[in-house]
Image (tube, rainbow, N blue to C red; front, side, top):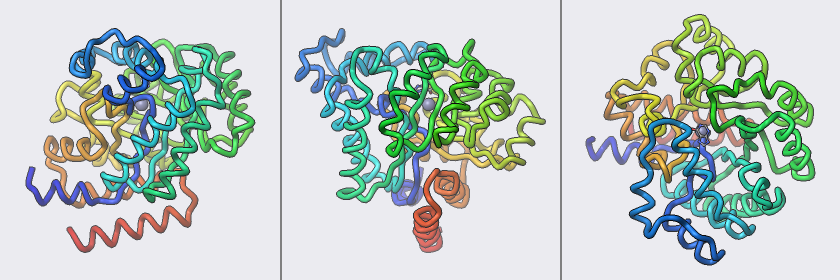
Length: 339
Ligand code: HPA
Ligand code: ZN
């Protein structure tokens, strides 16, 4: 990669739309928090923990991801986790981020919803003020649990409704189709939450159909397997639904064997509106800029392609129109001066 391209990516104003806060938990911070909470981690060092980050599939990763999140107990832990990610945003010119969090990963261990959300939002407020990074929250239901359990989480969230913009659906996809959550999504939308979901990461195109038709989602997380079905691709383009694509996640979880085979360019050629994201950067080998760099190299993307990807990241964000237009203007000014 040329230095010019690397610095173009580094300076490109961008938004991150697919990011799990529990997936930003760097081993060094994990050890630090585990130590102060008197928690045991079954690894002797940061290096040994990093060595365990080799995955054959999504479930392989999820097992270790939930184990890592288990050391988060106090509001300050959630604050430190979130603020540490937001500092990385500032350093990468990520101007805006939409952060997913998994309440059930914590409430099932006896940590209250309030502890989780207050830690995260306090960090977001501080970052807005001190780092100039804006953020919105996406509360994600764990799809390996029941719809009834998701309803409990929805209830838990209501006192904090003003702090949450959207709902998501994550965790083990195969065997847990979107339709399993039809009622809780309808109830969540009634409360004012915007519906989003992971679909077509490991699940087939029919899961993406369900996500758009049964859950009525406004943006598709991953969506890779949409390409199995031409009619679906046509429909996604027609309905103007963006895909939050995560290149390094896809290779880490063997959704894509090699970045050179990544379908991103095909998606763009078919008129799909795609964005670049890191998903779980502490586990998948890189932050968002590394995702831009590696996919640029693998697919030979042009500066114009990268500009369009960054433009989509603001365009398909859940931001109000005033701030959205402000970021788009900032991006355009940068591009015209550096293309
Ligand atoms: N897929 C599903 N669930 C997840 C992921 C993912 O990539 N990351 C964190 N939870
Ligand atoms: Zn994800």
